[in-house]
Amino acid sequence: MIHNKEAESEAWFYGFTRTVSAGLAHLISVAFPAFIAFFSRPGTSWFSWHPFLMTVAFGFLMTEAILLFSPHGSLIKRFSHKTKARVHWILQSLCGACAVLGLAAISYNKHLNGKAHFTSWHGLLGLITVCVVCVQSLAAVPLIYHSLAKGWSLAKLKRYHAASGLVTFLLGSTSLLLGLSSSWFTASVGGYAWFLAAACPALSAVVIMNQVSSAYIAKKRLQS
Picture 1 (tube, rainbow, N blue to C red):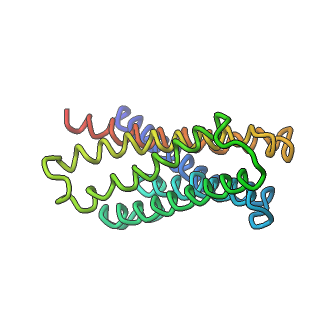
Picture 2 (cartoon, rainbow, N blue to C red):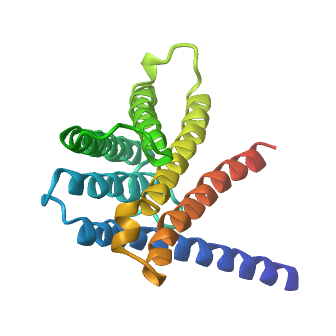
């Protein structure tokens, strides 16, 4: 009896912490892009679109796309898995579109100012991340239309997609962190505000890593 109560309290605490973590990730996904938009003032220059679109892409769209599958924080928890998958793909496609537009904006801005392209770690990793996002979105099509993936089981496709998706998200989060270390942002934001901004993609990455790893650890336990 005591053991059952302990198990119930542990399960409650586990669910509570997961719900709070997912709620924090939702809050960050809205607050962080809004924070960047305040400083970049999108539309005032070609450059201003770059930090705004990239933050919307990776800070909001990709984060929310993955949180759709969270058992403790999905905004469409009661919908079918098929519906979640389609909404996930739409959000990821929008993420790819924003990322491409953000890359185009900074590339055109550098062209106008006669500056070299992709000379920093932020620029190089950002380019790689945008390419990976586009490939990841296209690679997800067989998950929706499984007939396109002959010889591949749906379970294996989902496993590979989840693993590559996590890597993509971590690339995006790292790109955002490197962007916060740029001369533009450090000149605009300093002190505690900078650390608060840097904590946003870092905390989101921790929540998403925990969600993905927990989901597949749970599946392995059920299968064993």
